[in-house]
Amino acid sequence: MTHPQTIALVESLDHEGRGVAHVDGKTIFIDGALPYEKVVYSSYRKKPSYENAQTSAVLKESFMRAEPRCPHFGTCGGCSMQHVEFTAQVAIKQRVLEDNLKRIGKVKAERILTPIAGPAWHYRHRARLSARMVAKKGGVLVGFHEKSSSYIAEMRECHILPKHISDLIMPLRAMIATLSISQRMPQVEVAVGDKLDILVFRNMDAITDADFAILKGFADTHGTAERPLQVWLQPKGPETCYPIYPLDAPKLTYSMPEYAVEMPYYPTEFTQVNPQINAVMVARALKFLDPQPGERIADMFCGIGNFTLPIARSGAIVHGMEGSQPLVKRAVENATHNGLQDKVSYE
Image 1 (tube, rainbow, N blue to C red):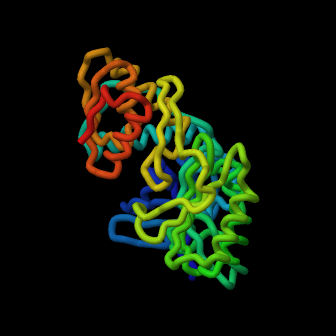
Image 2 (cartoon, helix red, strand yellow):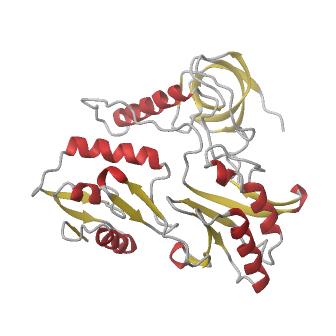
Image 3 (cartoon, rainbow, N blue to C red):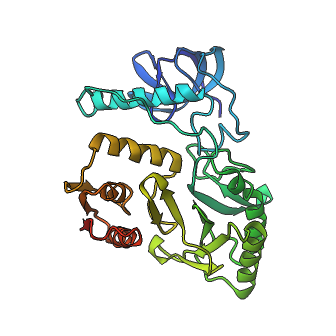
């Protein structure tokens, strides 16, 4: 189906990385367009007050525009801003935050800190990939969903995942196709820790002995003694996941050496996807908090103790509050693991 094409001057970006323009009193959200560009667009969804559109041609290019690194960018929905130069991405995200605070929160910040930025590539240590047997595509697809679609992008690589995990996409596609439940394994969750990598396979049916042998062989082929690749299964909800091979692998952890803290966690539990950003975020928070020995500090929505334990390491007494009881249990275990059980309490 063809859509009428119109020219627009792009004014800004929204939080999803779409260009924002105004044409004949309507707001137009344009995929692939950047601020200060003059583009030809075609609308694919029209509502009374706005339209969603796709860039057909760029008549005047923005100084922010960059060549996307990933060959799947534009189809894959895992990224939305690879066509924007990296420092401009950070500035745009800050502006979106400021606008949302003003427009939605009705507040204005008294002080804006320098944005926290980390590596541009291979930074994502947590990911949930979809898997599906698609006969007309020649087999199993493993990856993120296409933009605004339930279809899985036909990915061969991913530049936001660590390189060694990106390199597993094609072997994963081939391996899952050989399983007896290849059409009943819709998801692979990835967790990259300090000492090992974990793949959690969502198995809607039980695996066979032959399936176990295939998964074991995959782990042996792509893991090493120094850095194992551990296979987990998840038959139902996240709380049902469990390891199947190798069972003697080290714990999944991330560390914050400056606070002498090591955080064990389950692959389905919430942690920050970018460990470099997390380290800077915690350091900045503690710098401004400046906890002192003997002070009593509350950490709301404390999760597994990401902020709680570094604060406690400073000598302060910390009370963590968390709505998820499984996370409270994990936080208590992590406090004990780090010898901080006398400095923290949880509920």
